[in-house]
Amino acid sequence: MVSAVFHSPGDAVAATVPATPAAPPAPAAAPTDNTPSARPPRAAVDWRGLALRVLPPVLSISILIGLWALATMKGGAFPTPAQTWDAAVQLFSDPFYRNGPNDQGIGWNILNSLTRVGMGFGLAAIVGIPLGFIIGRFEFANRMVSPLIALLKPVSPLAWLPIGLLAFKSANPAAIWTIFICSIWPMVVNTAVGVQRVPQDYLNVARVLKLSEWKVITRVLLPAVLPYVLTGVRLSVGTAWLVIVAAEMLTGGVGIGFWVWDEWNNLNVAHILIAIFVIGIVGLLLEWALMALAKRFTFEEH
Image 1 (tube, rainbow, N blue to C red):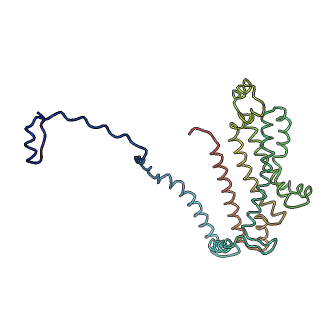
Image 2 (cartoon, rainbow, N blue to C red):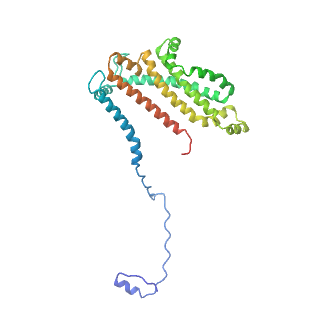
Image 3 (cartoon, rainbow, N blue to C red):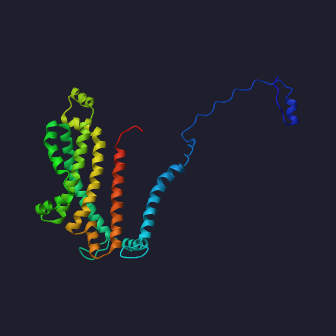
């Protein structure tokens, strides 16, 4: 007999009848593609990590503005943070105006400077990265070129500007030449060091497989050397952006460096301070972009 708990009087009569074996349960229906899957639990927000990332830079900027405000409380030629902010709001309300060839908004000046940096930096990459591969790959080339790099690398960037003016007879190509010659060295040196640090076992396997020199460079060396190349690129773009400001101050034209010098001639210190912040922000954005690119192509286990 099967004992059970019943809840209605009619069911009590059925309790006296011998229970028959229960039918086996029907197999569960196989899940289909339309069955909604369970959502994974949401990860908890790391408030402490977020605070450690946000608070230090906010605190440092606040301290800088506070010291700036204290230093300018008594007035003088140096503008206060509030005056500089008002000038920045007015300046960026129309950053792309044109009132003549030498009177243009700060947006055009930034774009012109970035254009010169892009051209000089691009030419340096086209020449410097292959040259670094050659120096790192062949000992004879390394011994031949290394003394020239050691001699020319420490030369001040602005020392190359008169050479560019003499050779090109124009300010714009001279500025591009200065960026090229100053940003090429980090790419050459880092690429050469990366090639020299490739494990010899990789090259031995390539030799056993009888790979051509082109395949050795593209299939073996390039993937291993890419992090070094990107490090050199990141250092070079910082140098290029640093050099263009000084070069434009001397050559004139439309550019952020010339704009700073022009505002100094007009004794507009607030605009000079704004230009300093703009130069720093643009350089920081370029640095972040290349660091993100380097992380994207760096194959390391974390």
